[in-house]
Amino acid sequence: MNWMAGHDARVGGCRWFMKYRNILGRDRHLTFELVYAIAAERDLKDIVETGCIRDKNMSWGGDGCSSIILSDLAFLLDGTLISVDIDREACRVAELVTEKWHIYRSVICSDSLLFFGKRNKEIDVLYLDSGDDPYLQLKEIESALPKVNRNGIILLDDVPTKGTMAIDYAVEQGWIVHTLVYQALLLHIDSLNKSYDGNEWAKSVSTIPSFSVYNEKEWDRIRQSIEEQR
Ligand SMILES: C[S@@+](CC[C@H](N)C(=O)[O-])C[C@H]1O[C@@H](n2cnc3c(N)ncnc32)[C@H](O)[C@@H]1O
Image (cartoon, protein in one colour):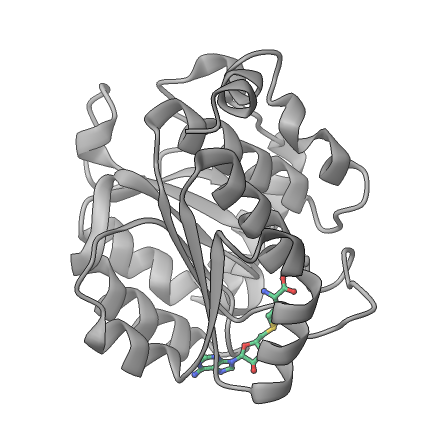
């Protein structure tokens, strides 16, 4: 564990994340910051993302540059990030822009479903942001979920366009929506100390109250768009 960094993440609202707070678009700073805080709190190590950074001009506002954020998190946790992407050029870009953290990250050029089919190690933090297709995100979560640590974190990107089926599936499997803005952050019910009736998406039942960032207005807007898609 990078102790100084870990300590820094646990106190003062996750100072480690501050450099990303003002450059990220689509409210992703809210959910990524929570991932930092919870991962540091729970000492999570193994991160897997599908859909790596593909734009070397750094699309912080659009795509989100997740490979940079998660490589930095892997460094903070003294863990590892595996970025999986089907596109060779995207993999090349990801390798280039995360070179600084190369000890902590690997980039694998593969179809995400093939990758999860072969993966036999537990995943602590799962980030899904590959094709813009709700069915693909559903298939990804179906194949990844048996390997995800129940004390871990699932973060889904682009909820309004591709997240709804995956969320429904994860909720059926005992995961709850801890935070829902543009991304959805899910935690397993077993890792929380509150009861949950299994029918409703939980808004926020954080065991880490000081990190319970929540944007009520954004929730209502996204929730409405999800309802309209059903
Ligand atoms: C929206 S981009 C990812 C953006 C990135 N997460 C970021 O924050 O900058 C989606 C990526 O998913 C990749 N992709 C699409 N289908 C895939 C699949 N079946 N398996 C793996 N990667 C896939 C695409 O090649 C593309 O690079």
